[in-house]
Length: 94
Image (cartoon, rainbow, N blue to C red; front, side):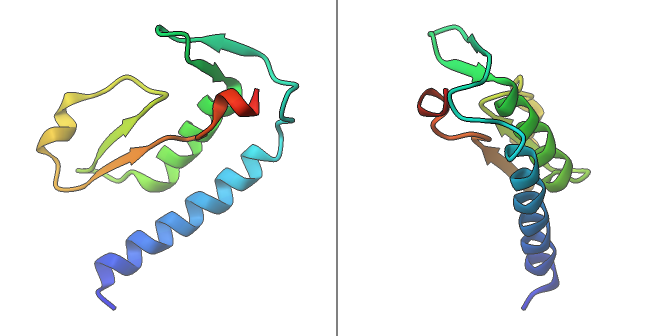
């Protein structure tokens, strides 16, 4: 296997494990909720998962696009861009 892909897969595995640990701290239905423009819910779990995924996945020279963080348009000039939804189904989780 190409070592670049091996590195990416290792990062993804580490990110999933770290996210699993973070997510376990939260109880569905018992979490404080705020609302973004457009009335989409966002919780501490969304933000915590975004942070841990970003920490484990993103490397120098790569871009990031997430529902839970401000878009940095410089991502468009990057060779690799991570596009994530840290907690798909926030409305159902709340």
